[in-house]
Every structure is written in structure tokens, then in C-alpha cells.
Length: 64
Image 1 (cartoon, rainbow, N blue to C red):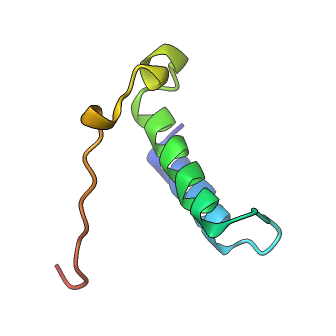
Image 2: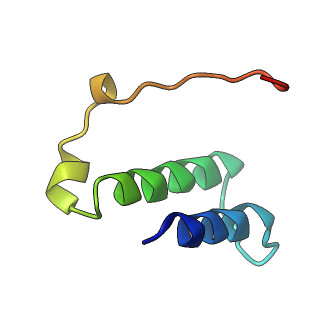
Image 3: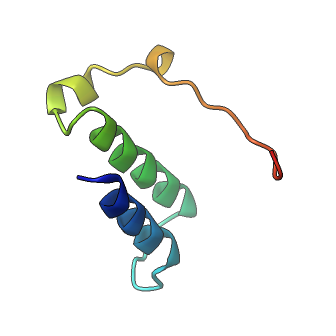
């Protein structure tokens, strides 16, 4: 999947009123899984081998 395709997929995930999820947190989780799948080349073994220690989450303030 190319970066442009991933962008369109994520844009649809966040803006489409037709995608209904039980909780909005699930939308963020699904986006993270999609991005991790793209980063790992969609190799299930590499994706399943990830642990919390492998993932770094940062908050970026607006305007930076």
C-alpha cells in the first residue's frame, strides 16, 4: 500500500459517517493497526511480534 492510499483510507475512516463503531476509541485503534500493518509491510508475524516497548507515542502540539 502506498502512502497516498493509506492517507485516503485513514481519511475515510475518520470522516465517513457510514463507518459506525461501538466506541470512538476503536476508530483510533483501527487507524493505528492500519498504520502498523503498512509500516511492517503487512507481514503478520512482524506485526504480532510488536510489544508496547516497540511503540513510542508522542503528543505534538499544534503549530509545531
